[in-house]
Image 1: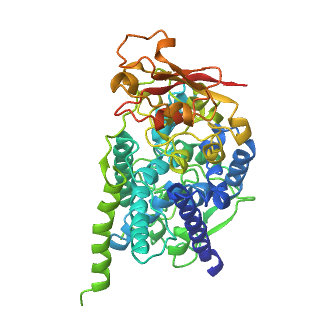
Image 2: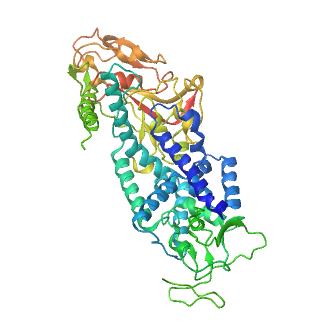
Length: 518
């Protein structure tokens, strides 16, 4: 009996490790954790399906066939979060659950919506329903900025004492729509978990439904010994999945998430997690509320001031606004006008994405690549057809040819692995020059910043008098202007990001539908 009750402790430890690892992986600014626990993201079910990672998919299904929905209670971070919220709610409202009938038609409807979204590349439907994607948006939009504030606070304190071990990070809202949706999703799922336990997993989540269909045939499962059962209903009232009915002699294994709370709560050890060899599989009869128990079924029984803390908060209150102000000034003297994103006819996607179609088909909008981008080039798309999926823009930085972080972290295969030496040969877009924004025409002075910093050597400077634009607004025809060689341009965005024109750059990058490789 003690061995059986230790199952919940063992499951809770594993769930805590996976939940902490994936959450820190999504919040980590440095990218160091990706080397050690990046494999946790690749174990998520839907990204593995879209990446055609047959080994991971087969392993999850085999594990479900053997042990039930262990994935939902251990590996899925959104499921573990619901368990944590439900556990806190049990402190104030213990034994608040009761058996509910399987809403099979509703669950299959959400699965059909998810499949339709994958087939038709309407990934917004998938992104809103997929558990890992939802948790990724929650962490990157809500938790990561708070983590960044803490990092910046620690950095400011260390700098005050002459310690430079922690470096500050830039905090900014990558997508207002993503922030709003992440906040609403977090509130909705948390409220449902507080009131109804695993209702989201067993009603809305398509991954839970698919694995639930597999778990109905699982080898190991919670089993009730009705000779020992005293009909106290503790297991039923503590089942967060609402899948245990003592009156009907039934545990719905398709909805059971193997949390083992029922085993721990049973006072007489009548429930065990054991193999079902030779056991007759009970089917749930079609009962309705108010029906009498089936014939032969046993009747149920319904019955001082912390000055150190204050000093720390005061330091943070002074340091954080100062840090935010420093990011908006040039050397603390000249205030820079914020740069605005241009309107691109074709969105930019990273080199490993192959093209816009591949990314649209496979991206689950989990936000992992966005949170890991060291140059702040990636951000969630605001276009309805690709909402929350990764897209590129160069207001904060540019895509350095030696950086391949996004291709290393993507668990869904939307961004394929690419080496630095391969990336320099991938043309994701081409630069477009805007005459009216360029300094020779707007301010009568020469610049050449774009040509100096182009890593591909795709921009050259020519005199206005030799370009056919003489007499069209420039003060001096001897001033030089940039000319773009589209065959050499790889679309890295160095020219757009480093252009001094504000608020719109005089040169910007237009994306390619399908990337060209030299």
